[in-house]
Amino acid sequence: MDWGMKNRLSRIIRPETGRTVMLAVDHGYFLGPTTGLQEPGKTIEPLIPYADTLMLTRGVLRSCVSPKTDIPIVLRVSGGTSILGNLADEGLTVSMKDALKLNVSGVALSIFVGSELEKQTLLSLANVINEAEEYGVPVLAVTAVGKDMVRDARYLGLACRIAAELGSHYVKTYYCDDFEKVVKNCPVPVVIAGGKKIPEKEALELSCNAVQRGAVGVDMGRNIFQSEHPVAMIRTVREIVHNNLKLRDAYDMYETLSREKEVVFA
Ligand code: R5P
Image 1 (cartoon, rainbow, N blue to C red):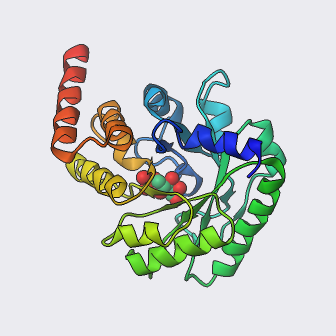
Image 2: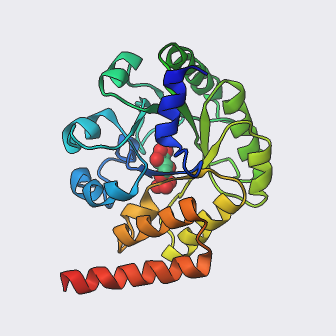
C-alpha cells in the first residue's frame, strides 16, 4: 500500500485506536429529503466535532458543508436509482477526478450481492478500485441487502468477503448474530451501518456488540440524526467505539447528555 493510500486510510480509521465513527448522511441519494436530512447542513453541523469522517454525496458536500470544515470526507460515488425503482440498478455517479478535486479521503459504493444485478455492481466496485489504486484513494464497499436477502452471517459474510477479494480497503455491512464470523472471514476492516431508526438503547447496544465482536467502528446515520438527541447519541457512540464504553455506562451517558442539552436550551 502506498503512502497516499495509507495516509488517507489513517484519516478515516483513527490510528490512535484503530477505530472510526463515520457519520453517514448520504441517504438522500435514493431516499430524497428523508426525516432528519431535510436540511442536511443544519443536521450535520453540530455533529461534525464528534465524527471522524462524513459520508455523503457530492451534491450535499458542495452545497451544505463549508470547504473550511476540517473533517475527512468519504464520498458516495454510486447511485442513479430511487426508492421508487430498482435500488440494485446503481451505476457510478462521480469520476475519480472529481472526487479528488473535492479532496476526499475515500470513496464508497454499494454492491448488491445476490440480486440479478450483482455482476454490474461488483464490476463497478472493481473498476472504482482499479482507478482508486492509481491515486491512493481507499474504497469502502457497502454491502446493500435486497428485500429477498436475509441479513445473517452467511449472507453478509459472503458479501463482505467478495468485496474484500475484489480489493476493497474496508467494508460496511450490518450487524448480525455470529457477527464475529463475518469479521473473521473478511481480511479487511469492517464497519457497521446502523440501519433503520430503533430505540436509542438498542442502537447503543448494537454499537457495543459490533465493536466487541471485531468491527472497527460504525458508519451510522439514522440512529444518530433521527434521534431525539443527535449530539448526545453521536457523543455516546464515539465513547463506545474509541473507548470501549460498556452498554450500561453508555446509556447513562446518553441520558445524562440528553438532559444537559435540555437544561442548556430550556
Ligand atoms: C445506505 O446505503 C446508506 O449508504 C447509509 O449510509 C447507510 O445505510 C448507513 O446509514 P444508516 O446507519 O442510517 O443505515
